[in-house]
Length: 314
Ligand code: BDR
Ligand code: CA
Image 1 (spheres, rainbow, N blue to C red):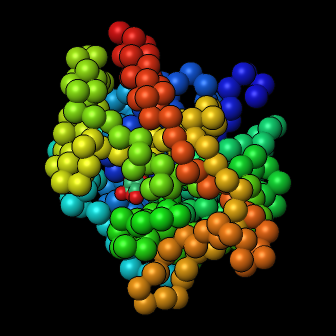
Image 2 (cartoon, protein in one colour):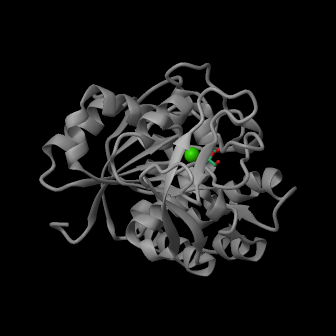
């Protein structure tokens, strides 16, 4: 933490909650974001890369954005248009006159070069399918010694969302997730067990809407997202932003250190993160599984970040 900030790389598939995660990362003042990489997931690789560049430029973040995998390692891509819209950011995701690709590197090169060349260990924050990370770990296993930890959004100890058993990010590329969970690198899993408790409520979205241009846009993204989530919840989960919050404020979640395996070959439970609560497998714990969360503090962090970005844009 040479500049007092935590060095991170964010790997994402914007995606509405991914966009809020980026806003929190750049507005919290606690993270040194060394690069942003994108992966196909919520929408195509072309869309997630465009959305990341578009949203980062909108919030005034100056960072390299490198494009990664366009499909999972073994499987066809599964996307989530019902949650994020056809192009990934609700109405904001349409192709426009954004800048051409600013990065000359692939996501894999950005991840491996940055890790190997940065003087400190770096925290990785993947909030989409784990394809890019798995490829980087396989291509250059020596990066492991430079990873402080992986704080990922994905998985669930209890219920899934893409299927009854599996959370979306793990379901989309279960082989990649398995590679990451078996890598030996310390992992914190911010799964549905906590993101479904960290909801932003309608009155809080209205408050955000009054914060100016960035607050209004985040509120509009929440409006779109609410079309899906409000059928089931009183508010919206902002899954990916919670993973970012847990990097600079780890106490925002309570965790248990447990063994987690990823199911890659089952008919009904493909992509399940199997959490061994009772230690019946005898496997060594490989993951800090988040089970409790301070919701109010999380929303406060989002408000503060949006206000900060708004001030910086003035
Ligand atoms: C995860 O799936 C995606 O749709 C979201 O962006 C988040 O990363 C939640 O299951
Ligand atoms: Ca995501």
